[in-house]
Image (cartoon, rainbow, N blue to C red; front, side):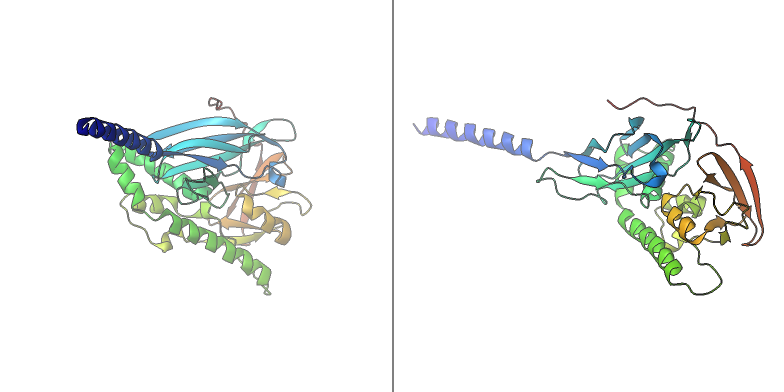
Length: 298
């Protein structure tokens, strides 16, 4: 009898252990929420160019303009960067890739929790640069032959949330400067895509980071008329948060002697290069038509 009871006990123990293992999974599903396509810049949205990247996974593909989110299975608490670049139509129907991607980094941008089954990561334009930087780090490290587990450890030792919080704060502060300024000199909008990317990536590759690497330098606040852009023309930056500044204050943020393109009236581009806030060269060109292609997501 004792042997029988012992056997039954072992059976229940094994069954219970099996249930626990099925409940405590090393993977979870995360819903990455795409930006609101009702924004004026996305009125001619064609599709999304998606890039999902982690230490052991990389995929690029397209999603239709009507998609609102993407469900991705990830390893719990291991960094995953997700970017979505909007591809848009010009007035003539040509498709172009002009706008910088929105992005999110799991688990730092996630909301909700595993147990509720509602873990989400909203993509924002402000987070696009951070997600892009992680993609670059992952790809460069893989090119050196680093192992998957070592790469995971490297990514997890860096405070990605602190980096994004600093970028968010810099953007918010620059917008506030415009709202409060009362002098003849325009404030400078903070665009993270104007950061010295080479220096930032070089230091991050050696796990070196300081907030100063997120500073932008030699930035000029250039008035539209000095940039030879008609005041009535719609002028769009590739970094979507900047466009409200351009609309309200008629100024563009340019980096010294670095060419930067803007979309004019959803028809053509103007490439600007500034040596000062008053000395700007402008070249009007056609927008490069998109010709590359990836698979569509199932």
